[in-house]
Length: 229
Image (cartoon, rainbow, N blue to C red):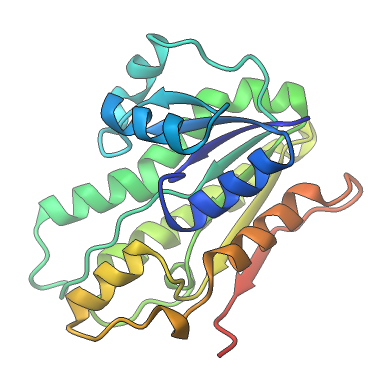
């Protein structure tokens, strides 16, 4: 039985991953932004434990977690939460930049730093759910793509730094996936949203579990998932 710490379990890919891991009997710690969200997650995933810390305020994550009982053993840290704001570079305010970089880049780096001691002992695994935007930036996607390009750099550096400690690091790059975030993106784009056109979150969850379950003689560094329709 493995112990996993998951961000973004409330919906989409994170919810699918949490369902799968809980169903097979693993221990879950689910990160929530506030006490109300933690209560919702506890009700949605019976048996899972919750931790409260706001990814939108990375400077407070260490303090918030210091007030709670943390797992003394962590086999995997799964960074799945994220935010997405679209807009022209010439129009994006510092508020949009700070919000996106905080949640998508700085908070995952900070969480990783805080749980690295447990991950090293466990010879654990850090999974960063990135995006196709983490490899290619398009018009209106500048702030989101910048955060995801940065997340790739964090993952690549972490992999090189922690290989000798037995910590595996995987980046997963899903294309457009049928999640609440995708519905919001379509709204920002002024387009009609049809979930059937995009990747099912369960399919992305399958790729994440593949990387987690790979025997120790191998490691998936980067895994790209694209819509098959």
